[in-house]
Length: 49
Image (cartoon, rainbow, N blue to C red; front, side):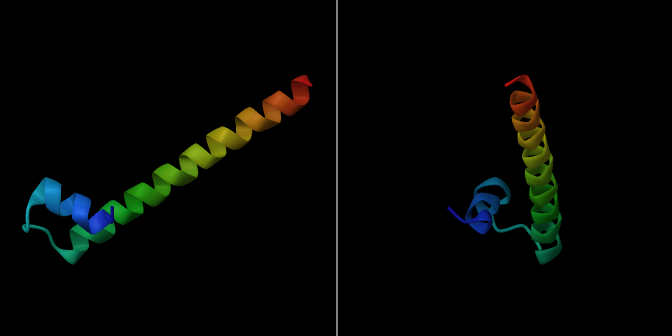
């Protein structure tokens, strides 16, 4: 499923390109947060081993 399809389900057809860009930015930031969090867990695991 594409991001635009998800947005249509939530907003209907009442969205703008700016809405899509804002949501894309938030998703990218969230992905970075989870990557860092996973990376920290892997480091902690390596340190314990």
